[in-house]
Amino acid sequence: MIQSLTDSDREHLQEALNRSGQKVTAQRETVFSVLLAERDHPTVDEVFNRAREAMPGLSLATVYNCLETFVSCGLVRQVNHERESTRYCPNLAPHAHFRDKETGRVHDIELPPEVIKSLRSILPPGFDSEVIEISFLGRAQGTDKNSN
View 1 (cartoon, rainbow, N blue to C red):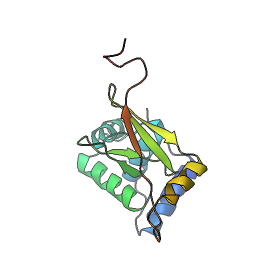
View 2: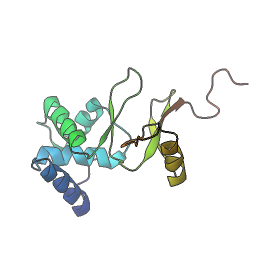
View 3: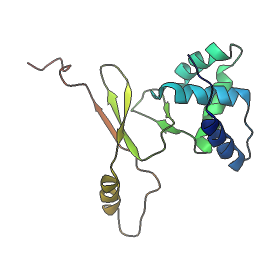
View 4: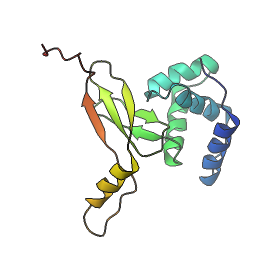
C-alpha cells in the first residue's frame, strides 16, 4: 500500500522540481511515494501498477513522464542491467547495485567513503567523476544450480 509522503520527502520533491522549473502535482507525488515506499528498484510497469492503487485514473504515459522528470532533476537514478527494463532508484548516495539472477531483485550496496576515494584515484590524470556506477550480477549463496 502506498503511504503519503512525509513532510521532508514532500519538501525534497518540491525543491528538486522548483530548481528545474517544474511544479509538484498529485501525480508526481503519487509516483514519488511509490518509489520511496519499498525502495526495491521498480520498473515503469511496477511503478504504474502500484501508483494506480492510489490513483486509478493515472496513465502509463504520465508515469513515464514523472520518472523522466525525476531523473532529469536528480531525484532518482536509472538502473540498467543488460537488456532488462530500466529500474528506478531513489537512493542518491554513492552506492552499487547487486542484481540477483534468480529473483531479478536489485539490492543496494553501500560503498564506504574509502572505496569511493580509491575508485576516483584510478581515473586518468586530470579527470574526476560526477557519478560512479557499479553493478554486480549473481545469485544468493546456496542457490547456484551447479553447486554441490
